[in-house]
Image (cartoon, rainbow, N blue to C red; front, side, top):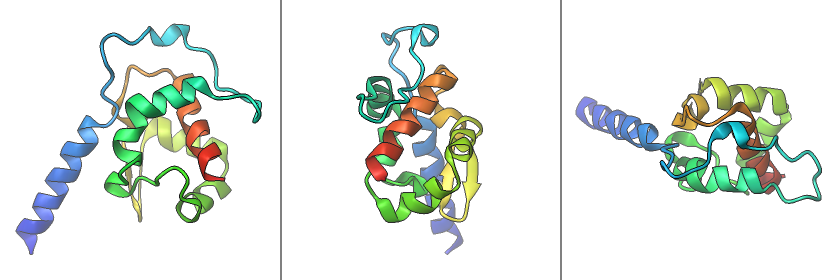
Length: 126
């Protein structure tokens, strides 16, 4: 039992360390625009961050990551408020349902890019 738990923990850690790996050819984070505030406008920055970084864990639900569009899983998280979601994404979080590595494991992403990714996933999950 302990060896299977250790194997699962090691596999989860390996997958989390791969979350957020950013391609070398992406533009500098300093030139990225702020998250889109208007709900009618498409959040292109958030969509790109999700596609290149967040989706590695959130699309498959790795380590308890809520899948975009899963209203039951996202609902309680959204109810905590956007400031809490941003804080967990930026600083990392370990809770009863799983783990979130700081900055999604992508330290090169700017705060605005991280927030845009969160905004994108929340918009998909309301």
